[in-house]
Every structure is written in structure tokens, then in C-alpha cells.
Image (cartoon, rainbow, N blue to C red; front, side, top):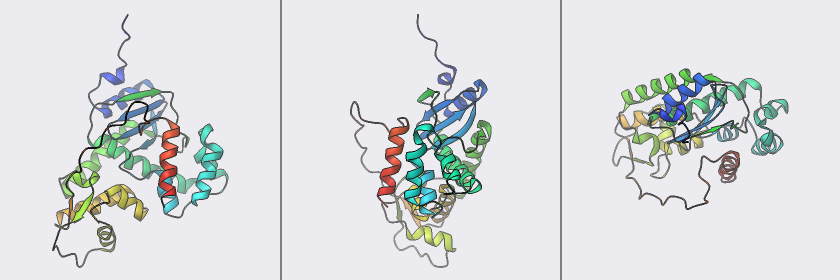
Length: 259
């Protein structure tokens, strides 16, 4: 007998799959083309994407939490999915500050997961993020906010390549008189950094950085670099970036050790 296809897998987009899982009250992790969305009882509790700085980067680079304090909380609570609770209980960060930063990271990552709303790739029932639940958000709110952001960014500048490609300055383009935030953003455009890299360097929300970068593109100051040759896919047995907790922890630790 052939196993029935799960309902989420019958939908042509990740957002539709999320809606189906929300209707079921599902708990687990849904992987899309550009990231992962974690659900608890049908509500979004976390999202991650390689195209947006994660919570660890935002907290540590902003100075809200010392890197050593972050990794102590991970070591103490990671296996029990209580890193967020441990950060608050230990006094490393206030509950309000953690919630604001967490929601910012969640919506930033969800934007990339849903920006190119292709078919979802995988659902891991019961998967729980090591951070634990900081605050949950209804799926329809996450989908609606992602669409709102996409529409606003397209009105500023219609090329979505600005969001993910390495960025270069346009030769001989004048840049005098820029607002402070836009000038700081432009100063980090070097032909290598992506929007995520620039946001991480500024300890800034990715969406705010995208707004400035698209405005710079509209002003003729910045453009996406030519795409590099495609990298070979990992061989058999290699860890994919969306593997459960251990791969994500390793990626976060490598990013912080590179500071």
C-alpha cells in the first residue's frame, strides 16, 4: 500500500504549506528553498535563513549579550530547548529585549523563506528549535508581513537580486549628502558583502538594511555583482544547512568565532 501524501506536500508554495500545517495545529520544522520555519501547535515560533543574520549575531554584535554569555546559555539549555529562557533567567538579557530581537530575526528570515514562494521541501514533525519558544506568531500574520515587505521593496527598486547577491558600488556615481544610515550602509558595500553581511556588520535588522540598499540601487549607487559560478552540491553524507539542531549550532558558533 502506498503511503498517502501529507497535506502540506500537496501545496505548490511554502506559504500554502504553512497554512495547511497551521490548520492542523502542527508542531515541527518546515524547510523551504531559502530557510526554515518552526511551528508549535500551528503557530510560528522561529524562522532562520542563510540570507538574514540570526538571533545570535543580532544579540552579540549589538552588545545586548556578550558572546561568552550567549554560548554559556547554549551549552546550558540547548539540549533542552531552553536557550531563550536561560538568557532571561540568568539576567543576560531582559525578556522584553529578547522578544523584540527574536521577532525581528523571525520576520527577517521569514521574508526570505517566502520571498520566492516555491514548494516546501521537507517537514520534520515534532522538531523543536533549541532556542525554545520566545513568542509565537500566527502563520497568516507572518505570510502577510512577508508580502507587505516584498511589495514595499519592489516599489523602491524592483530587482530582488539586491537582497541576496554580493553588492558593488557603481563607478563614478556621486554619494554626497546621503542620510547617515544610508551612508553607513554604502560604506560597507565592497563587492564581497551581501545584504546579510552588511546587516550583521551593522548589528541591524535585515529588512531595514534592504530598504537602504534598494534606495541606494534606485539612486544609481549600488548594483548586484555578477553571479559567481555555481558551487558543487555537498556529497553524500555531508550536512545540509537545514539539518536539525547540531548543524545550526555549529553554523552559529563558526560565525561568532569569525568575529
